[in-house]
Length: 157
Image 1 (cartoon, helix red, strand yellow):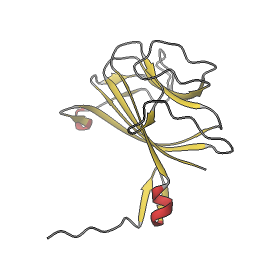
Image 2 (cartoon, helix red, strand yellow):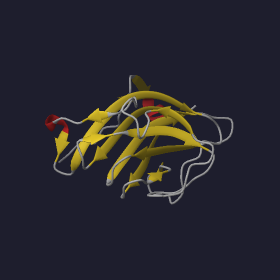
Image 3 (tube, rainbow, N blue to C red):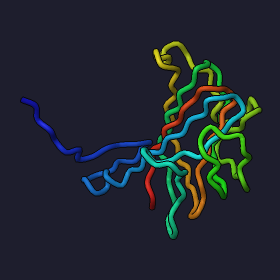
């Protein structure tokens, strides 16, 4: 016989969410790029369109998990005006980079992943961040390699 207990608190990126309502407000977004030179607009799990920050709110990102099939990746996060989809070649409309720079070794999120970070299904990088996305904008991410996935944890505030 197993026992199921409700989570009373959960910490993401240095912020502790307390109580079932607060914990229930955490949003998990997922994005993937399967080819080199593509980018995406992450979406909530099970949704077919990109996540847009609803009116009169901001979306604060607290934690990012990035998986790649290579051990040195440049990647970038930001927000833009439109949903370009997953695994897209389209350019972002009015992009604003909040972290990192694709094509530059100076990108904040450039990271050579060590063997201790390697998993059988790819290399994983977990980052605690603080990134605020404004009302009406779409979060984006882009990487300079193929076969990568990103999971983003945040809350509308």
